[in-house]
Length: 130
Figure 1 (cartoon, rainbow, N blue to C red):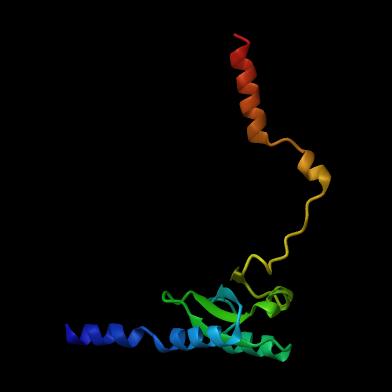
Figure 2 (tube, rainbow, N blue to C red):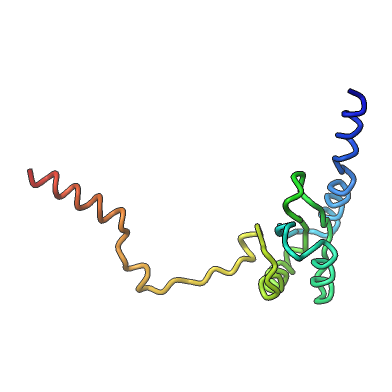
């Protein structure tokens, strides 16, 4: 029983998240990212890529299940970090919504009818015809 408890305590890394929290507080507004831990990109690779381009990176750690690498950058550098990760083909699992580029749709796309709405309108007209 005691051995199992010690194994559990040894597996849970509480120092890294605590240190990352302190760095978050010291560095101001942050942007958190998550990438797949099963790809060719490791923690050192991410750190080297981003710091090579002037981005301050901290809190690089695995999540509890070990399938994702999480890290933090300054919010002001978030868009640049996202661009670099995309350019290099890093499998991004999550990124802040304010840094993710979503192309604007043209007015032609917004004029198209919603197919679900069209079905319900058809059913309403069909029902009212009886």
